[in-house]
Length: 326
Image 1 (cartoon, helix red, strand yellow):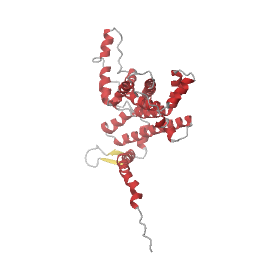
Image 2 (spheres, rainbow, N blue to C red):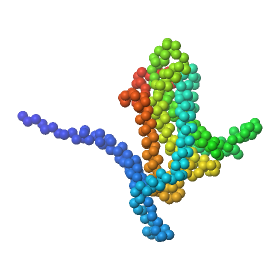
Image 3 (cartoon, rainbow, N blue to C red):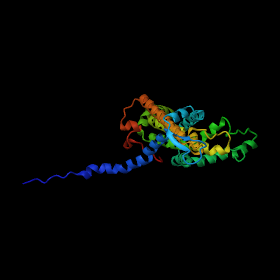
Image 4 (cartoon, helix red, strand yellow):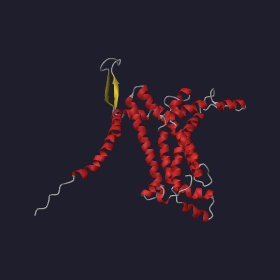
């Protein structure tokens, strides 16, 4: 009696690759290929022959690393990077400090209308950045701002927030107003995942609410703070819509105020796509270096094992608290 021949189940083995194919295709089309094309553009430049008129007057040639050398020595790009550092020095500490404060207050048992308060804090994050910049821009203008009118009636000085040093505060205020709610939700979610038994044991040991917040809650949500800080650094280095939207309202904002504005100016105004590509690659590399450097430093300081629970920074959901009104 002969045994039936076993047929190889190619369909089962190839099923994972079939499911991954759409994601891989989209990754190649909308991520890998654009990055590769930007790298190719950054290594070329346009040569103009004669007066630059007629067919063949402009020709793309290989430039090597010349565009990168020009970008690294460009004073406008360097000044824009310094302005972004000053802007981020205001935005990141204030935004994360307020997010942590609001999350701790919402996690308190004495807070009423927790759901409404959480939604009210998070709602500005749903407003598009251009709309938020326009709204705050008109509130900053002395001729139409109700705040300037009230200060004038009260006989108080009326600061011009769209000129000089206060401009950094005005731009930072827009980012803080729009980003605090998102970071608060991340930290608050981590707080809600802490088991209630931890706080009950702390209360039995005589800890006050302030001691519980400082010595228990904040250390246990440290991974969430690292994550929000990581996102805030990336968002700060990529600031573009706020200064671009406020630019028509003030002369203190140049067309190259931020690095991304400089890239836009070179690419679509000066028609130098090759220099813009090199600058974009440098900005992306600097963002990756700062982000991963910060994550590496944060992981080395915590010294926690890289397990699934340590990455999330919270216990499993089955052990989390269930409070009324959360």
